[in-house]
Length: 406
Ligand SMILES: Cc1ncc(COP(=O)(O)O)c(C=O)c1O
Image (cartoon, rainbow, N blue to C red; front, side, top):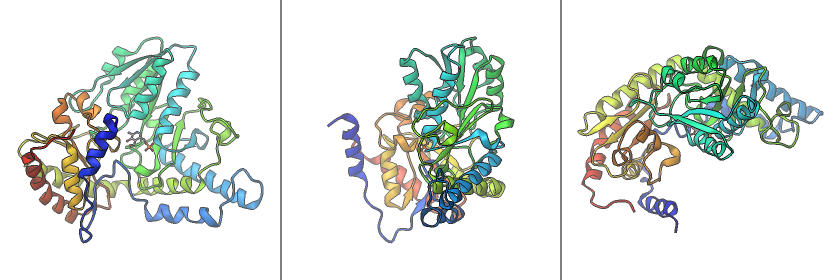
C-alpha cells in the first residue's frame, strides 16, 4: 500500500458516523456549500422541461440557449464584466488551468517567465509545475506570516520576459484577502498579464473585474451556494483564451463540450443572490465568526492563522499546540455532529502539513494541527454556541491521546 493510501486508510478508520440523533452543524463552507433554494429552483426546469441541447435549432434547444446566454449576462453583471468576456467551465480547477495555459500561449513571443505565490491552490501550483517542465521559469513569492504579498515584493520579481502573474484574491486555507488591485497594477506596469483565482472570494467579498483590473479571473459555483462541477472564467477583451478543451464549437469555439445548462443557470442564480445579499450576509457571518474566534482563542495554545483583519468574512482557521494531527480533531468534531476540516478540503487526510501554513512560517508539526471552520449565512448563533462548547473539550482529549498517525 502506498503512503497516501495508507494514511487515508488510517484516517478513514478513525471516522465514526455521528449518532443518528445528533443535529449536524455544517461549518466547512470553504470546501463546498449547500445549494441555495433560489439556485435549485432556477435549475429544476432544465432537467426535464427545457432539457434541449443549446446548439440545436428547434425550440427545446433555443430555450436552453436563451437560458445559457441569460446566465452569462447575470454572471457578467455580478462581476462587472461584459457578456462576451465570460466563459463557462467545469469549476475552479478548470478555470485556473485554462487561464494559465492560455496566458502562456498568448504571450509566448514575449517570454517564458511566470510569477505566482506559495499559497496558491494546487490547481494553480500543479499547472505551473507542468509549465516548468515545458521550459517556463516560475518564480514563487513567499507571503508574510499573515499570508500577504505586497506590490513592492512583486515589482522586485517582475522582469521584461514575465508573461504572467497569477496570485489569488482570497486564500482557502488561511482566509487572507490579498491586495490584487495593487498587485495587478504592478504586473501591468511590467507588461505582464494578471490572473487571479477568485474561487473563495466571489459572492463573499466584492469582486469587480474592472476595479481589480485583472485580465483573467476564475470562479466556482459550489463555493457560493451553486451546484458542483460548474464555474466561469473571465477573460478581458480583446484577450480571448486559447482553446484548451477541443472538439465542438461551443463557447465561441474556445471551449468544446455540450454546455452544463442547469449548472450554469444554478451558478448564475446563486451568484446574483450572493451579490445581492452580501452586505446582510457578511454582517451576520462576521458576528458569528467573532464569537467563535473569541472563545477558541481562550483555549491555551490556540492561535488564529492568516490575516486577522483582511480575511474572508466566514473564515476562521486555527492551529493548536500539542495536537499531533488535525484529523483527530476533525473526526471527534464529526462524532459531535460538527463538519469542519483541516487546512483545506484537498488535504483533509494528508500526512503532509498544509503547504499554505508552512509558507506562512509555521513548523510542520504545528501546521498539521490546523483546523478550519468556515461559516455561511445558514449558520446560527446556537450552532456557534455548540461549537464553542465542544471544541475546547475535544482539543483537551486529543492532546491527551498517546497514539500517532502512521
Ligand atoms: C482557492 C481555490 N481555487 C480552486 C479551487 C478548485 O475549485 P473546484 O473545486 O471548483 O475545482 C478551490 C477549491 O477548493 C479553491 O479553494
